[in-house]
Amino acid sequence: AAQRAAPGPRRVLEAMRAMLDEGAVVRGSCYVWTNAVYRRAGGHPEDVFHPTRRGRYADASLLQPGDWVFFINHSFHNVTHSAIFVGWVDEGARTAMMASYPGGNRVSPGRFSTYELTNVYRLVRMGDDPNGAPRSP
Image 1 (cartoon, one colour):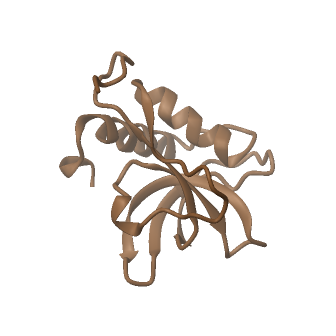
Image 2: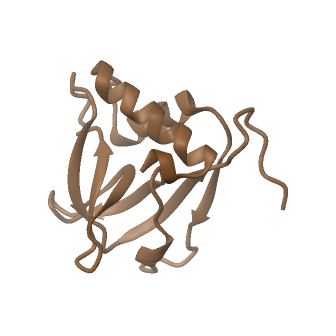
């Protein structure tokens, strides 16, 4: 996925892979771990989808490898979760390979897992400028 990604998402995927390979532990929540990946990648994250109305979810076609995905985790008590999108396992069924931290302040590294992405309520994508400047409109 990293070879085909734009520069910003590629840096995210490379930073994610490095953290997984190192077994880096970032205690806290799934948000804290994903934010650490994005900080390591450098640049300026930008909202791709962030609805103002509750219950409006992103279309599957919006997701790209390296995206920071906020979704309802149907495999664990329907709680909110965030992770990095790696790619589709079955796009029709909205099953995706993701990299995430299990949360709960565990002393555990991030890991790959599959998740159902039927209720994605926010998408963030890394801008292409590694110096952190936002892309021009």
